[in-house]
Length: 232
Image 1 (spheres, rainbow, N blue to C red):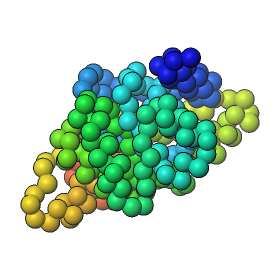
Image 2 (image 1 turned 30 degrees about the vertical axis):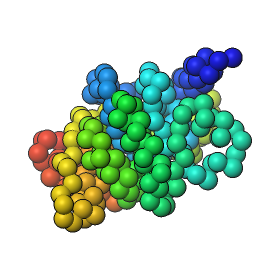
Image 3 (image 1 turned 60 degrees about the horizontal axis):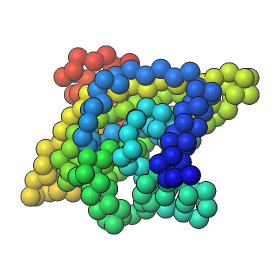
C-alpha cells in the first residue's frame, strides 16, 4: 500500500473513531483560512485531540508536533513518519524542530499546536509556552484560536462505559496577526505575545475553563474590545 493511501486510511479510521465516540459540535469552522499557511493554536485536554485535527482539516500538509518522549514507541515512530509529524523537546528550546516547522510553514503548511505543551488535568488553561508566538512572528502567518471542550480522557471513558458518545464542542475564532518583534526586550515581548495567544483561546472557553488566564488583564481587554460576555 502506498504512503498516500495509508495516510488516507489512517485519516478515515480517525474520523470513524470520532463519530463513534463523540457527539461533535463545531462552530466557527468558516474562520479557518481556505488555503495557504496558518497556525492553529488550541487547548489540549485529552488523547482524542489529535484525531479531531485530522477529522476537521482535509489537508495533506498538516504539521503536528509530537513530544520526544514518544520516540521510544515503535507505533508512535511509524505514525510520526506517516503523518509527517515533527518530534520536539517540550521543555527545552528545540531550535532544530523550530527550523523544520518554519520551513514547512513557508511552503504553505498548517501548524496545529497546543501552546500549553501538555494536557491539562484540570480542564483549565495552563501557562502557555513561547514556541507558538516565536513561530508566528518568524513566519508572519495568521494565528487561529481554537477551543476544545469535552475531550478529557476521564469524561470520554465515563460516557463509553455507559455506551454513550461523549459531547465534544469545538469553537474556532477569528484569525489575527502578531506584530513583528522589536529590537529590544524581545523575550519580554514574546511572553506578551504568548499571553495574547492564550487569552484569545480563553475567550472561546467557558469562564470555568480559562484556568490561569481567567482574570488576566489581556483577556479582559479582549473581551471588552470584542463586546464578548464574561463567560461563554
